[in-house]
Image (cartoon, rainbow, N blue to C red; front, side):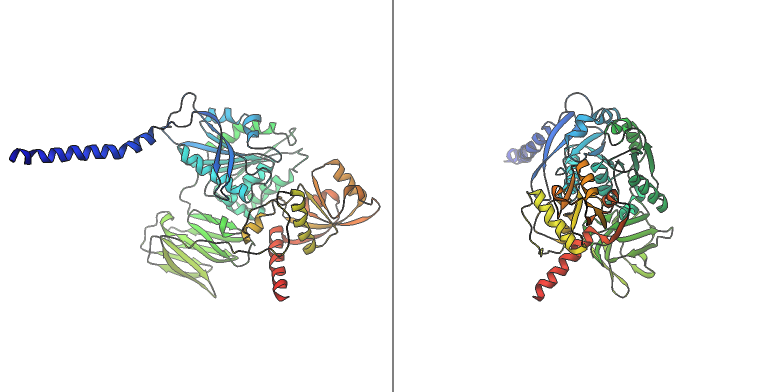
Length: 504
């Protein structure tokens, strides 16, 4: 009896060991699954925007068989131009050679093709970053974004709207939304453009560099000569770009932040988050700084509600947190969780704990009919006619088809995602039929609404609605600048027509 009693603990231990081994086997098998081999891969991922499978290219440095990286590697995301796809950078530039040389992972999104990296195209880029971080050991403080032409616009657009994700950005031969440039405070952009570019005027990037200088934002501008709009400029600058990325790690705990956003959906940076604007989608601006005493001074414009994440603040040696918001002194005894600031006659704050309130874009029923989005010509024509109804003009003149399908159900955010062309300022101009015919026949990418090229009367003067940059290509005598950006015009039109419909 004593013997049996003495053996029982040993049997129990053997049983426990066997049970633990059985439980660990699935985990061990999962850990032994082969990683992706080093080199070039054509992959897909599932979009969080609409659940579709989307393609991308991935390059993993380090010759030889698959092996885990001992140290996290930096990631460079490369955005293609108009009319090509995710293969362009990998097949026609030496980006893989430089990624191998510098030890970078490289990813090339498709971004829905010619969506200008807006709406689902933008989300695809963000999804790919998360997918690559899941597959590989990525250094989160070394994620960079670069692109050329349409990809140059996408680099500025996504980089400025998600500034705390990237260590730096390098837009080439592109544009930048001027109202979002304050978000470049910690990005150190590297801007590259050719002074003889016949497709995207160098003035675009020169103006961006001037704006950044005026804001006091650190950046580098390199102006090339002789490339025009050719992608060969990419390869000849990659050495400079990769070295720039190496020198600019992501800011981890900034004490000063500037957050410019048109919508709370793309309105967060480090420990600041926009929750509601006063006028949607006009640009909201939040500027915040922490002094040596730990007081957080915040100024706002077009902001109704915003949040501060106390856990993410740089270390502050004090009990509780004190704020000055637009001159209003506020304080909380909490040092963890989220604080929600709400504006009425003055600012007030509420501690909302570990989970911030979620932003939900308001649903909207479009008060105008649209054709099938797969018919890009008809789809674009219908949207341009909405703009013409609001802004006037007998002929609409745009580059490419300026609208893409952001998906349904419709919300205010998806409404502002429908317009994808980078020039967001419209203008009216009086242009002769002869001049219209000359410009259109010299470049077939132009998109005309309200007239056919072969029926234009060359002796007539037409009232033309166009993006400002295209209006300037037609004539030096631009008659009228339309107030507001295109997205603001669309929201105003939708609300006005919905009200008219409800009154009928």
